[in-house]
Image (cartoon, rainbow over the protein chains, first blue to last red):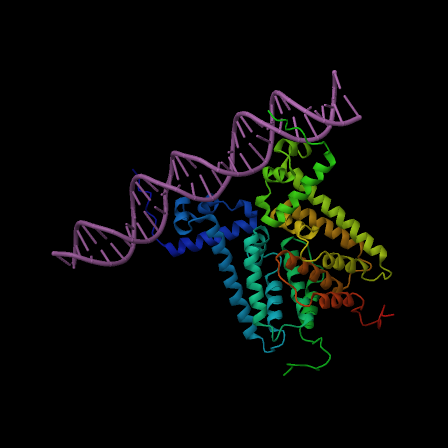
Length: 195
Length: 195
DNA sequence: CCAAAGATACCGGATGAATGGTATCTTTCG
DNA sequence: CGAAAGATACCATTCATCCGGTATCTTTGG
C-alpha cells in the first residue's frame, strides 16, 4: 500500500502547467491531440486532477484562449508605450509582435491562437470581439486605410508562419511595412502627428 | 416496410453534395463537427453511401481540399488571362478573388481552405506546396516586396472574413491595394504602368 | 498549542456516447 | 443478369465525463 499522494499540493502551479501543456499540444500536434488524458499526463496529473481545475474540456480551452489574449494585450500595450510616435503605434506594435516571434517560435501566442481559433467558431467570435475592441480603442491613431492594410499583411505573415510557408525577403518586407505606418495616406493634411 | 430506396440514383450529384456539405460543416461548426455521420446526414445519404464514394474520411477531406485548389487555380488563371497588364497580374488575381467572394460567402474556397488546413499538418504541407509552386510560376511578374505585402494583406482579408470581423472601408481598401500593385517599388524606373 | 473537522486538491477506474470503419444485404440501372 | 449505388447492422476504439475514494491543507474549538 504505497502512498501515491505524496505530491506537494500546488494548485496554482498545476493549473498553469495544465494550461501550458494544453497550448503546447495544440500547436505541436494539432487540436485533436488535445485530449484530457494527454494534457493530464503531460502536466503530471490525472484526468480527475484536471477535472478539478477545469470542469469541462471546453473550460480548459477557453481558459487557454483567454490567457493568450491577455498576454497579447500586455505585449501590445508595452510596445505602444515604448513607441515615441503616436500615429500608427498600435499597428506597429501589432506588426512587430508578429514579426519578432518568427516562424520557428511555435510556442508563441499567435500560433496557439490561430489553431484553436479557426477550428472553433465560438473562439472565432471571441477573437473577433477582442480585435474589434482593440481597433476601436486605437481608432484615433490607427484608422487609416494604409494602416489597415499593414495590419492585414501582418495577419498574412502570421498565417504563413503557421503554414510553414517561407516568406522571401522577410527583413525587407518588415522594414517596408513599418515604413508604411509612418507615412500618411490622406493628402489633405500634410502630417498629423509627426512631432 | 416502406421502400427506403426511393432515391433516384445520381452518383455525381451525391458525390458533389457530400463534398459541399463537408466543406460547409467545417466552416460553420469547426472541423470536429465534420464526421462521416454528419456529412452523410446533411447530404441525405447514409454512412454506407458515403463509404462507397470515399473509402475513408481522410479521402473525403483530401477530395474537398483538392477540389478547392483546382477551382482556385482555374479562377486565378482566368483572371490573369483577362488582365491586360502583366506586372502584378497574379497578385491582382489573388487579391480580387479574395475580395469578390465577400464576407458572407462562408462556403467560399478560402474559408474551407483555412479551417481544414490549420488542423491537419498534411494539408498544411499541401497548401504550402501549391502556394510555392504558384509563386514560383509568377516570379517574373510578382516578385516585388510591395506585391508580397499585398498578397499577405489579401490573406489577412480572408482571415478576417472567416472570423466575421468587419473590414471598415472595404471598398477603399480594395482599390488602395490594387493601386499598390500597379506602382513599382524600384525607384530606378519612374512608373511602369500608369497609362 | 494542538487535534479534530471540514474543505480543498488530486487519484483512477467505470461508463456511456460518438466515431471511423467493415461486412452484408437490397435496390436500381445499363 | 451483373455491377454500381446505397442501406443496415455491427465492431473496436477513443474520448469526455462522472464518481467514489484518498491525501493534504486550513480552520476552529478547546
